[in-house]
Image (cartoon, rainbow, N blue to C red; front, side, top):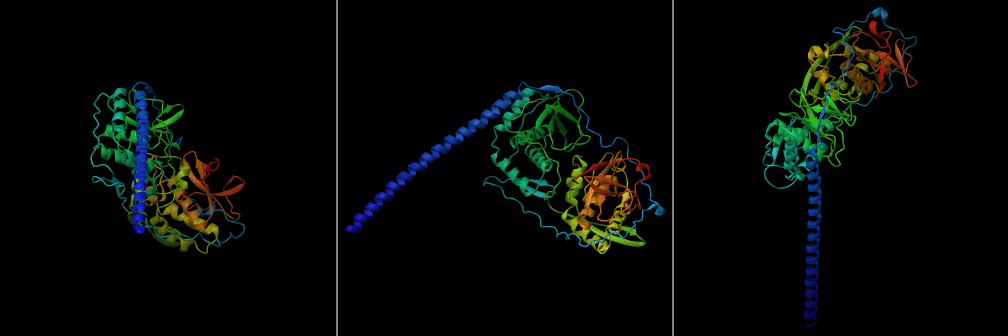
Length: 482
């Protein structure tokens, strides 16, 4: 009987606890719904206010042409250094006691990230060989008829804001991290997503890119003519030869991913910002994107002090594709950019035995001869029809290269094979490098921050460290530090 009473008491207690627990859970759900409703109202309020703003505050802006690379054209042909003009050191240069460690083998590619929540089958996007899953099953229909005006753009924002975007925005952020994307790479990913979800409608894709970038916290703007929308983006870095408008004393660049922009006539945009959208797109190249890797092979030959060398290398085809239409930005960013895993592993390991045991001057001269003579020279205008700075993988891939591409590659080799400091040297229509040797190396040099950097010109054919092209001997270059 005593046990029976105990069971009754315990049972009653459990019922009471469950009732209280259900009540607490019910109260929590009510609080959560209230909090979610308040958040929804807050978001809707932001979007409504911005949509109302878009109806009225538009101005016609003057489109300005982009900043030019050089004040005069680069030479079509490079001079050849004479043997008798090469400087001779007074004392034997120091040997390189310890080479930097060899690079690791390329890592495996990342796996496909699953859709964040269960639901309809997600859309798939190819991003430079990497499979991207987007948590939408259908495209977004946008009825944007011509002629375009501010009232219609206001409705565009409202249309996009009415669609639940949280899962998409979360997924885009995940891919930015997984793929190791800088600002430009992320902008491309957002645009590819926008194109897919708007069935490749050009104006709709531009509008959706603008909407998503603002929701992701970027200070993107949209501009229009009667028949066309344009994406405007401020960047942390200068973009050369790219048209822009000045808004509140800041450059907003016209961004095109696949076609030439017609900016003739009046172009309208606005000055205000969407709430908390204040980030600028970065063009820094501190790390390469983590894409589906595709190794391609190539071989180069050169001579140094009567000996012929063959250098077989691999480069990454997806890296080349990624940077094919990369905006041309400040050259110091290219000097600090890495090579792909394929290129760094193959090129550095092929050249390492050639410099091992040599003194620092002889090793640098060997690397100079490799960059000077293993590659065909052409200006970017001759090869591409426009100026293009190239990363090491691109210099290996393309049939020709010019001065800045060779300077970037040579600086990469000196840092990673010899462990020596390098700076860039900027002449009016030419780029070279300066190397900080530990020995007293004769010839042309530049004093920078109390250190003597010896001129090393990777484009001046057969020139050794310390030699300067005859036409540049009286010109003091600007220093590119990085």
